[in-house]
Amino acid sequence: MPNIDRSYYKELLADLPVNKRAMAERFIVAIQEQKTTELANYVTIEQWGSTDHGDLEGLTDDDHTQYYNATRGDARYSRTTHTHPEEAGRSVTAIELDTTLTASHAIILASETITLTLPTGISGTVYDIKNVGTGVITIEPDDLETIDGGSTATIPTQYECITIVSDGSDWYVI
View 1: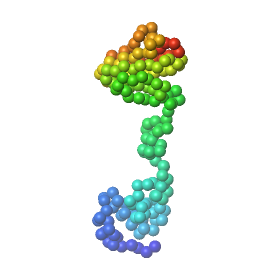
View 2: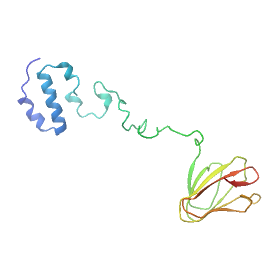
View 3: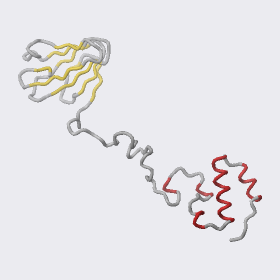
View 4: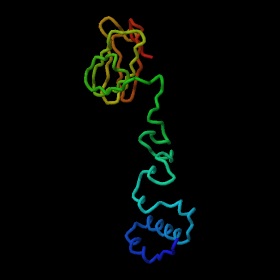
């Protein structure tokens, strides 16, 4: 390999950002010294603008698992596909108006002063209800059922929550 005059590259290097200029200078030195093994560790000039590791020689698209990746999520936290089996399929619903709950409700984040009406109980139906506002949340069953023997249950305090379950005849706060 012929000896390359560094002065030829000074104009080109002057326009590069400092971090890339140092890499380019090492690249030129590696060429001059004919260190082909060292040269293999540097990025070619055409690849400087790439942000895709898969475009760089010797790297794969996902070789840095400690960094964020939209497919895998952030390695420091739960994977994006992570679920708890007992929680899978439970929907979270924010409610601000009087509402009759249905089978599609599971976890309710209620705000304002509202009434949540429970459907006719089916044994095993569970609702988790949290007051995320400053109003009072009133929970009432249908006409034939009770909640812990009473006609209603309330969640008067912000961030208080209850879990309510049906045995098929009545509702119970657990």
